[in-house]
Amino acid sequence: MTLLGILSATVSLSSMIFCQLAIA
Image (cartoon, rainbow, N blue to C red):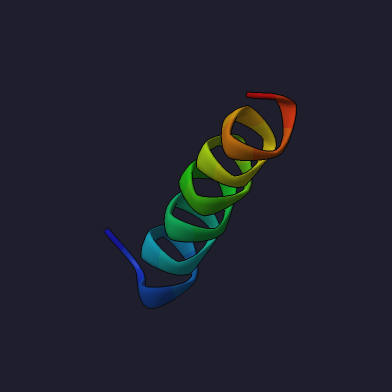
């Protein structure tokens, strides 16, 4: 895993959680 890969995974996961919280 590269640093960019970890960063992109973290951003995508955070955005998905944020979307669920915003919708809920």
